[in-house]
Length: 213
Image (cartoon, rainbow, N blue to C red; front, top):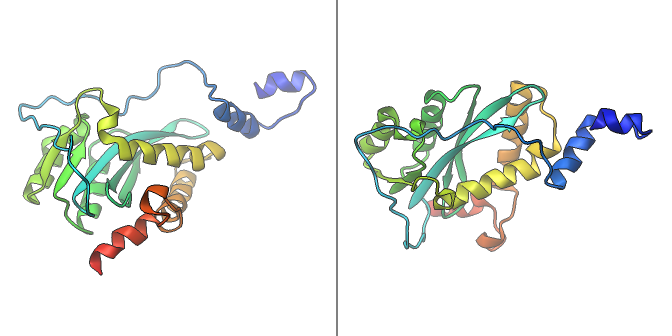
């Protein structure tokens, strides 16, 4: 598009074209990276959050994986979030969908606190014995989304929307190190500076850290 506009006498940077296309909701039609490949396991866990009231921090945590586009290629981003405060407890990136980067983020989150319930989709990373055993060893109740039900994990979906529209789509990450640097700055902003209407215009950190007072 940038090249075509230049032929029409409108020299425009690729970054600006990309930003405007995102703002208009326009994108190429092509297969996207699949971040949630269903796992096969004999042990099944029900969705535990239907109809319950989320009233305190560490009552429910959840996690998910999304992909982040780079100038060339893409990376995967996994995050663990506290439902009540929207606080991002840990995040990690990877160039593959190997389970190890999810375990690293989970372990860092569990160094902060222990939730009563941990919810995820039924992707192969989260249904793996390595991941579920970490939760069971910590005596955490495991909850899985229904197949194809993104709204079962709504707070992580909202987090991804914020990350992409407020950070990723307005930048052009050159590579992995550039993405890590910018995402680290964004998550610091998200936790400690970004006000949430649903939190009475407090930050996630203000709400989450109150639990210790």
